[in-house]
Image (tube, rainbow, N blue to C red; front, side):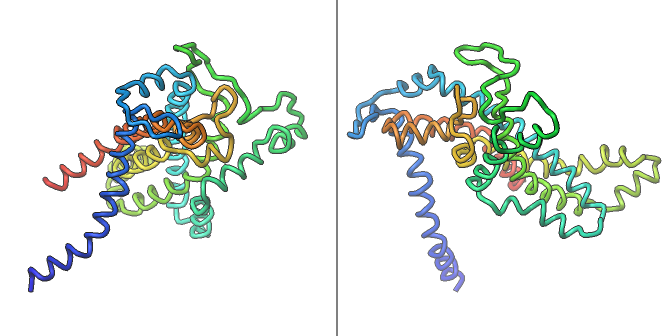
Length: 304
């Protein structure tokens, strides 16, 4: 009877296993194989190109700008989303009146797709018709250009590109933070509610003020939540495509371009399939560098 149940369990998971094997790992292997070929026209070309496609990308001005933008966007996006989410969670955790209403308001943006978010914030940050109209009414003379600004601060020359923070990217970061800070809030709120009140009371009895209780008792307890927030937001930022594509596109001088947008245009508009596959593989490596250590750590804890 037990053997029969084991076979039934195996048959139930078999379709999912086969689907993941083919459509995830199979296509990853296919993409990796294409990236080492010379298939850069509509006609399939399986000739061996070695690292030629990768070397071309790392010498390409647009791809260098993409790597800079990805680094800047990821750092700003994670810090601001996690920080704002933590502040909102602490605010709601005080058992304020109308707590469920505030929770729903902050989480609601997650129900929207990045495409909708991108279109809405493109209207808001339009230099001619968006929030700049209000700033102009208030008497501000030098209006920000938001996502069409091509400045990079401090603009240190490194290779072919200016290294720093592209000002146009800040508008995109604001839109992304608006979308996902509610997710960070939900994670932190769950973590705050899981901390036993006795721990805080014990610290207060020992003479700690509220700030010391938060810094030395609450924050350390939230460390696993913070790690999860960083991993989830980090992998979203490294492969982001739809928000950028709907809101700004590559931008002038590629100030808002990302590897996902470059990969899409290279592969499906330029028909450079091998180069597009190389970009996809590099994106996979970036995401793996963030996620694999976390998964490995969890696996070791599970074994122990």
